[in-house]
Structure formats: C-alpha cells, structure tokens
Length: 283
Ligand SMILES: N[C@@H](CCC(=O)N[C@@H](CS)C(=O)NCC(=O)O)C(=O)O
Image (tube, rainbow, N blue to C red; front, side, top):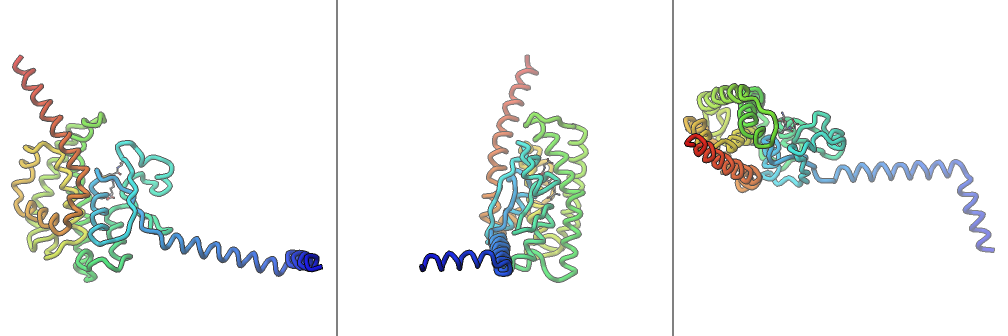
C-alpha cells in the first residue's frame, strides 16, 4: 500500500509540468552558480616559456608578490605556441598569456598592469596610483617595445639563437639590432635613469624595471666578450640591473636558471667553434 502511494506521488510529481519546470530552473541555477564559483576560485594560470624575456618578467613579478598561480610551460622552440589548444587562449601565438577565471590576457605589459590592479596584495611602488607616475611608467614601457626590445631581439636572435637552433638568420638584421640596442642603452643611461636608482626617477622598482631588466638579460646569450663590450660602457645601467636583481631576489635568479643553463651550452659551443676555426686558419 505504502509503495503504491509513493509511486503515485513520484508520478504525479514528474508529470506536474510547473513543478518539473521549477526543479529544472533550480538545477540550472546551481549548475551555473558552481561553475562560475569554480572558475573564480581557481588560481591564476600563467602560460610561459622561461627562455622568453616577457614571460620571465611576469613569472618573477607573480613570485615576488606572493601571488598564487600555476605556471604552464609553452615551449616556443618546439612551436607549442601554434597548437590549436594554445591558439584558443592566445590567437597571436605568443607567450606570456594569463587566464584568470574566465578572463584571458596576452601582452606582458598589459598583464603586469592587470595583476597590479586585480591582486590587492601587490605593493604600490610596482604601479603607483599617482597619475603622473603611472603615466611615466606607461611611457617607458611603450618606448621599450620599439627600442630596447626590438634591438635586443634583432641582435640575439639573428646572431645566436637562430643559428644555434638551425633556424634561418639574417646578419644584416643582427647588425641593425645591435645599433638600436646600443642607442637604447645610451637613452637608458642618460635619460630614463638620470633621476633615480630605478626608472623614471623612482627610489623603488616598478613593473617597468622588471620588464626592461629581463629584456637585457637576453644579452647573456652573447659571448662574454660581446656581452661586456656592449654593456660595460653603461655604468648606471649595470648598477640598475644589479639593484633590480637584488630587489627581486631570490626569484630573479631562480626564474633565469633556464637561461643560465642554455647560456653555458651556447658559450661552450662557441668556444669549441672558435678553436676549430683557429686550427683551420693555421692549416
Ligand atoms: N609584446 C609581447 C611579446 C611576446 C613575444 O614576442 N613572445 C615571444 C617569446 S619572447 C613568442 O612567444 N614568440 C613565439 C613566436 O613568435 O612564434 C609581450 O610583451 O608579451
């Protein structure tokens, strides 16, 4: 008798269209509520390759500010940036990229600014709220992309990274890169660093210092002789790099570990080649 009653109850519950609709809406609401909650509480994802200077800047910045994040490696030399999964995150096929919940963002400078604004624990000197100071930081970051970065990439890629990885290189582009790099180092020495220990007259580092120093670190791929020939005339630049490294220790060296390892291999190979060429010239 009791089981017949419950069967009737069960059938009448499900055949009552209004009740059924109500339960369906309730189920949808819980489904969307929990999926939204899940995407909001998941840690920030940083898609990066530690061989890439803007990737390193974002990684160091997250670490120094104690941000909870997951690093996802995208090996640029293995062309992983062109996979369809990665293109769905960044159609430009470049690293770094972040995914924060449902929000995706590429371009390292935009990412650094987003992190400063979205994570309350970030100290204000990284991206001061003062409009004039903030605008000066934007100014040096924009300058960086078409000057310092352009010069460094042109030189290092065409003289070292392309030949070391069996890719086509352009010696003329390497020469032009070096010219632009030297001009940019001179502007750093005589203009951007003229008023303070850090960029744009600051006494503490900002996101611009991390970004630009990570770029110059790419010169570690050059031979020691070329590295010192290019960098050592710029005493303020050298000191500022040391100050920025110290301000971001121990994360700076840890994130650059991959670069130091690759540098060792490349320099050893260069030394062997120069011995070979010397022997050949004597024969
Ligand atoms: N302006 C971009 C530069 C990004 C960029 O050029 N990333 C390089 C690595 S340093 C990359 O992903 N290259 C892959 C490719 O060009 O295929 C930023 O600051 O994020």
